[in-house]
Image (cartoon, rainbow, N blue to C red):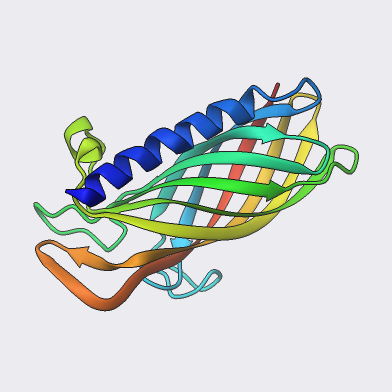
Length: 194
């Protein structure tokens, strides 16, 4: 019961921070960035970044704000059949991460590094009942980096991130001891700056 309250407070707090980050001072540049990628390493179906035949699509969107050097990003991502597929079994993963960014502006190019905290929810379907449920919630962290290239208010972005949960992984009614969910993700995205 306490973890449900903590998860609810965390989601409210990260949403408030994300909204305040977007509404920062006039010199800050807001962005929305829809992306497609795939997960690899750790618990993902692909053992490595480059040698992978069974790529599972990971899709999502990030939104945030960038100043001359620092920024903030709120990211939502969904990977269907993350652990593989079986009839009647959901094995998808949803991540909601709040990230601090080091994102210096070098003309139209913005290399960046990021780190953050958030929610890693396993065994979730894209339905309100499943997403709204507090079952299979894990707090976790992510680190990563990439490069944005902006052409005015539109650009492209390449990104590599690593995700790791703080808590042991639950698969159905069983908690696997000393098994933290971890994986990497490579993605490509469009960037809409405003």
